[in-house]
Amino acid sequence: MLNYLCCDEKEEYIMPYVTVKMLPGRTDDQKRALVEKVTDAVSETTGAPKEAVVVFIEEMQKEHYGVAGVRASDK
Image 1 (cartoon, rainbow, N blue to C red):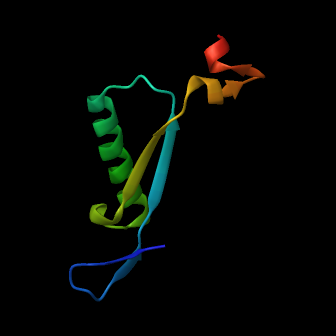
Image 2: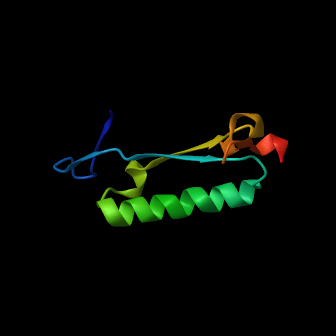
C-alpha cells in the first residue's frame, strides 16, 4: 500500500484505490466522467486529497460474467 504525503508533508494519507468493474461499451467520455465523479466522492467521504485517489476501470468480457446462472454473452 502506498502512502501520499500532503503538500506540507506533515499530514500523511493512505492512498485510496477504487476498482470499477463493468461490461464493455462505454465511451471514453463516459469513463472520464466516471473517474472524475468517483474521485470526487472518495475525496469528499474519506478526506483524502484528490491527488491521492486512484481509480481503475476493468472491463469484463461478457463471457466471464453471469447473473442468475446465465452468462451475459448468452443473452
